[in-house]
Length: 293
Ligand code: PRT
Ligand code: ZN
Image (cartoon, rainbow, N blue to C red):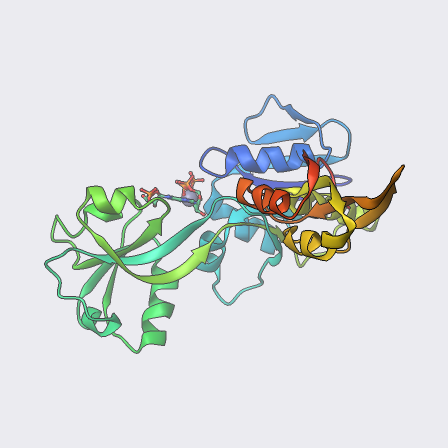
């Protein structure tokens, strides 16, 4: 596959856990996605960009080789793809697709730390990441590579332990396995090719990256407006989570109170509102933020 002249390419997972959220991010960055005749390629209607829809395992290589300019993939897949060749650069974490690569063992294995894996067999779909971790721990174990259904390996006596992705932990529990070590914390990341795009496309590429950064930054962020008694202003602004310098404005006809507007970078919970009220804040409004730059 080679690059198409005059068009940028973004690699996204075709179908799987990251597909929906990846498309949402592309759309939220203002790109209008139209399905092509070909399932592999979606076109962007309002910019010279194509979305290449592939298996997630292929995304790091496509981006590293410059076949795609950007890609959205799990850190776990990116780390597994590292092979000493050219690498895609991580632009930023995207806040979705969170999971943890963990070592899990059946209760029959007496586990007292990584040394308990010495000389044992460990099944995984992430052999490279696991081998690096075992080496860091100074443990020699046999790594059994499985494409899927890793969690059944101990029951089938294929392995003594597993190293697999966990999100809720339900799969481990259903298979009677206990998580013992964290090998890697992962989430979806935006990656960028080390190969520069055609010069005419460089500005477009940077603007897409910037817009995506804006979308990610505004996720979970809220705009908070409230009225505060002057006397408690410091205590009230201290309660606003992740707010930089809030805007403080006079309220007409009221000497004792001011209006406070703030962008809160973190979630605003009911508990926070209750504490604000207890400090005398009133007319509290919490609004979603659509875009931020
Ligand atoms: O077809 P393609 O190769 O593109 O997809 P895939 O089957 O390789 O991957 P997919 O779609 O299952 O996952 C894509 C990415 O989502 C992964 O690479 C991770 O970055 C991320 N992700 C987040 C997860 C999970 N959460 C997750 N829970 N990927 C897999 N799982 C599996 C895990 O392997 C285990 O079997 O879910 C099970 C455990 O889930 P819990 O909730 O029971 O703990
Ligand atoms: Zn995959």
